[in-house]
Structures are given as C-alpha cells and as structure tokens.
Image (cartoon, rainbow, N blue to C red; front, side, top):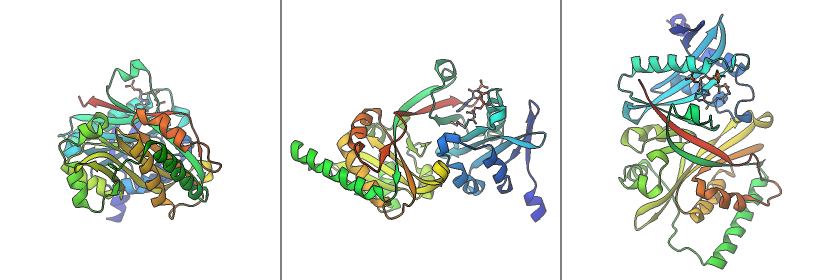
Length: 336
Ligand SMILES: CC(C)(COP(=O)(O)OP(=O)(O)OC[C@H]1O[C@@H](n2cnc3c(N)ncnc32)[C@H](O)[C@@H]1OP(=O)(O)O)[C@@H](O)C(=O)NCCC(=O)NCCS
C-alpha cells in the first residue's frame, strides 16, 4: 500500500518530456530548478508540501530523461468553474524553448479530464510579456506592488514613524471621522462581507476578484473555505454599514531571499488611499510580534494608491523600499 502511494502517477508525454503528478518526495528536485526565482521571494519552498494535500489542487512535473525540468500547478476555484495557474517554472538550462507552453498544455488537458466543469483559466504574473503574448489572454486588471525590506527590529520604529506621519496629515487635513477600520473577527463576518452583492463595485475589485497573495478568487460562497484555509487577517472600513475598503495580510512565511527571510503579503482593495495608510500601519502592528530576521513586505494595491503609499513609507533608516514600481497583471483565457 505504502509502496503504491509512493509511485508517481503518469499523466502524459509530449515533446520528449514525460509528465507526472508531483509527489512530496519530488521536493528536492523541484527546489533544484527553483534557484533565484522571484529574486528569492519564491513561496514554493514553503507551500510545496501544503500543495501536496490541498483539495482541488493539481501539481504536475515534467521530466527529460528522468531529470525534473519543469513544474506547473493549478487550483480549481470559483465553484469548479475556474482554474488558477500557479507556480510555473522551468529549469534554467531548458528555458526559452517552449517548455512552459508544453507543460501548461499538459496541465490544461489533465484539468479538463479530472474537472470537466472548468471553463476558464486565470493567472497573475509580474512581468508584462508584451502585446503579442498578452493578446492570447483577456486582460482583467493590473495592480501596483510596493515592496519594503528591513530587519524585524527596525519595523517597530518604522511603524512609529508612519503613525507620526499619519497624525501630522490628520492635523493639517482634519481627522476623517468616517473611518472605522476594524479587524474581521470570525467566518460569519467574512461571509457577510464577501457575499455582499455590491462588494465588487464598491471596492473596485480587480476583474471582480479578490487577489490573495497572487491567487484570484471570485467573492463567492464556494471560495470562502479556500480563503479561510489561508489564515488571513482581514481589515475592513465601512460607511453606513457598507464596505468601502478591505485588506488582509497572509501570515509571514519563509522565503529564500537574502539567505532566508520572512515574507509578508498585504493585499488592499478600495478607492481611498487615506484608509490604505491606516491599514498598512494596522497590518504591520499585527505582525510585529511574529517577525524576526530579515523581512520583506509586499503591498498589492490599486495603481492610484502607489505613489502616495511610496511617499508614506519613504525616509526610514531601517525599512526601505526595494524594487521599483512593480505590477501584478491579472489575465484570463478560455479553456478550449
Ligand atoms: C517563466 C518561465 C516559466 C518560462 O519558461 P520557458 O520554457 O522559458 O518559456 P518560453 O519563453 O519558452 O515560452 C513558452 C510558452 O510559455 C508561456 N509563458 C512564458 N512565461 C509565462 C508565464 N510567466 N506565465 C504563463 N505563461 C508563460 C509563453 O507565452 C509560451 O506560450 P506558447 O507556447 O503558448 O507560445 C521560465 O523562464 C521560468 O521558470 N522562470 C522563473 C520562474 C518564473 O518567473 N515563473 C513565472 C510564473 S508567473
């Protein structure tokens, strides 16, 4: 029985490569092709084993002459209608020869076989592949990314600095008494928030979706369980009992950056940047006790917030912006 469980499941063959469902014991080989991915911000070293048992997740590896050369993964979401592509990678020596296309086609056909209800494929990516490649997709949205980096001890001073800046702005502009940023306490509140039919319009959700750490999910009942699995900390601001701002952070997780760091992801939705400033402080305060060593914080937000947020975060000795302006593209394609 155990022996059987260890055997790889063959899923197909194409262009001289064989494809298999990824197994826990393929971890080291997957890591070997993952050096330097996303400038050390790769989530896969941390998530690989979680993916191995995650419901409705497919992870496929490609081998050439037995050697692991590519990985692709997909999560079936939106009540079985959509598949979200994640984790795509090809070993450096095989890049630029179409392998990423081959493994994606194998993954698509496997998904269609196992989940015939899937009609749409969605993905987010950082780099803009240019108009020719983009034309193969429906462009849904583009968000801005602000990235910060510092030692954990520096974040206390950084947060105090942000608070003083906030007080100064409030003194000159007058406090905004309409703002009541609060932490969502339970799944009941989360359900009420996400299933509010006006949510997408009020928060200008990108492509009508919530993008959680690069994973787009429609705000619908069947995705609640997926979001709950992620242990997010949610902040909401509402006006007349209606949400006008929403953000959440993913619990800090280890990434290879700078010899080993913690990564904190904050995703923000709404139209009012003054709430976003407060939310940033609140999220960082919540993680202060948990962080140690080098910490990278990525804040994903509407493009209109970016310059304001960059200025808000600038000028600290210990916590500094790293990377220029970055974008998160959200794309969709029909599964033919
Ligand atoms: C990005 C990466 C997977 C591309 O692999 P590759 O085999 O060199 O890709 P190619 O340039 O030969 O392109 C092959 C196909 O993959 C597609 N592709 C390339 N990068 C892609 C991406 N980031 N997301 C989705 N599809 C991608 C191309 O559009 C092309 O499609 P086509 O066959 O339909 O024309 C590879 O460079 C890599 O592993 N990089 C590091 C990890 C990474 O950045 N992954 C991106 C995840 S968003």
